[in-house]
Image (cartoon, rainbow, N blue to C red; front, top):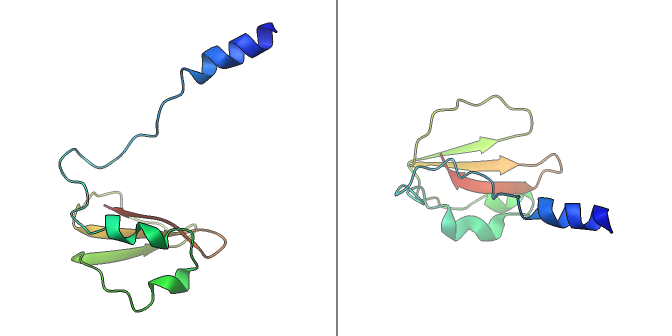
Length: 89
């Protein structure tokens, strides 16, 4: 019983992941309308038109710069060759 109480107390301490996007800069790259592609195969982005001034496809293990550009669209691909996330940066 004591174990359950401790787990319940720790669950209340959980925090949401940090959003690296500075406040006021959300979706300058047009990522929001593309969220329906998340979870689909990488080929789903073929032929898509993007509002962003630049698009960066990030493959597993790929080295990328850490500079933040609110107008750049980042498309992260999982090990299973699926779209894992689409976000500005």
